[in-house]
Length: 116
Image 1 (cartoon, one colour):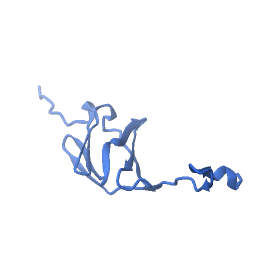
Image 2 (cartoon, one colour):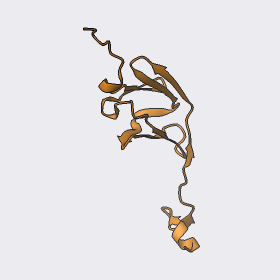
Image 3 (cartoon, one colour):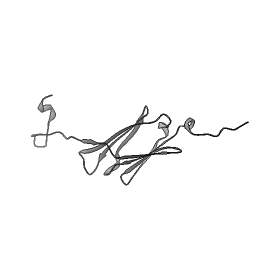
Image 4 (cartoon, one colour):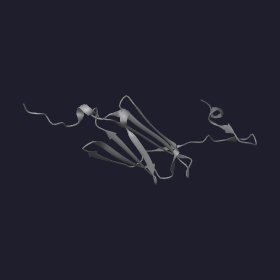
C-alpha cells in the first residue's frame, strides 16, 4: 500500500492523515452471584447510542466510542462460561458504568431434590 492510499483530502483538496482510533480495554469488575455473573464496565464519556454489545457463540463483545474524545474507542471481548445463558443477558448504562448481568442457565442452577 502506498502513501496515497493512506491519506485523504480535506475540503481544500490537500492531503491529510486518516483518522485513527485508539482501542482501549475498559476497566472491568466481575462478581459471581447465586443467580449468575454481574459485570461492571467503566465507560466514561460513552453515550448509550455509541455503545454496541453483542453475544455470539459464547463470546460477549463490547464496542463503544467516547463522545468527548473521538479518537478513543473502547473494545472488550469476554468468553462466557457454559453455565451462563447468553440469550438472557441484560445491560444498562448509567453514569459511565455499564452493568451487565449474565444469568445462569436453568440446568446450572442448584435445585433441591425430593427424597422419597
